Length: 130
Image (cartoon, rainbow, N blue to C red):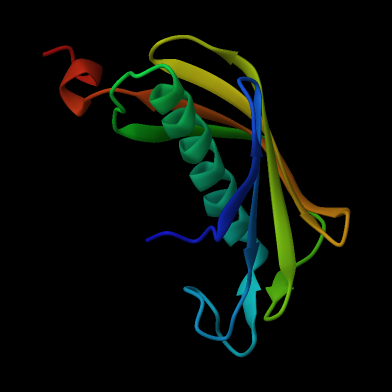
């Protein structure tokens, strides 16, 4: 399920993605999307950053897992059909298997959701110690 429309800018330490909420968008009910879905927009933007970085370095990509979300805030209850959103992600710290990313979702330049996401890249077997 891809929710993002485009990558607007990407560098080694950050990415900017965008999407517009359409009547046919996943999670739209009665003309709006619950703001908690912004967490998925953030997670998909982190995944886009990691995938592009792996591609630039000619590395293979790995499965990723969201393992935590801290200091998450929502400034609105819902996002509306027609809203054009920008998702900004900055790397806080990362290594080959873990990373922490500062994320913001903006609507018309105003932050509507923000938080710090922690991710793990690798197999479930390696988490379980197999």
